[in-house]
Amino acid sequence: MMILVFAQWCINHDLDPEQLYEEAYPNQGKNKVLLEVLENTVSKKESEEIDDQLVIQALQLFGNDDLAFIVQKEIEKRERK
Image (tube, rainbow, N blue to C red; front, top):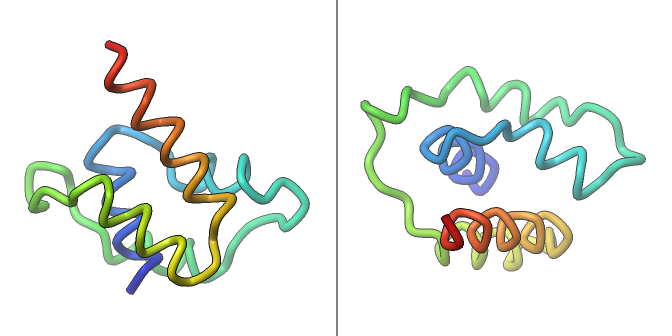
C-alpha cells in the first residue's frame, strides 16, 4: 500500500516513480513491486489528492528514509516554482 501511495503521488505531480526510486537506491536496480504497483495507478485526473506529508510519513514508517528524503527534495523544488 505504501508503494502505491508513493507511485500515485509521483504521477499526481508529474514525476517518474522509477526514477525517484533509483535516485534514492542507485545500487538496487529495478524494484519489481514498484513495477507491479504502477499497473494499479490511475491518471492524475482520476486520482484524489495525496498529501505530501502523508507520503513522507508512510515512507519513513516503513524505513524508506532515503526515498522520503528524495520526495522532500521534490516537494521543495515544486514550492520554489
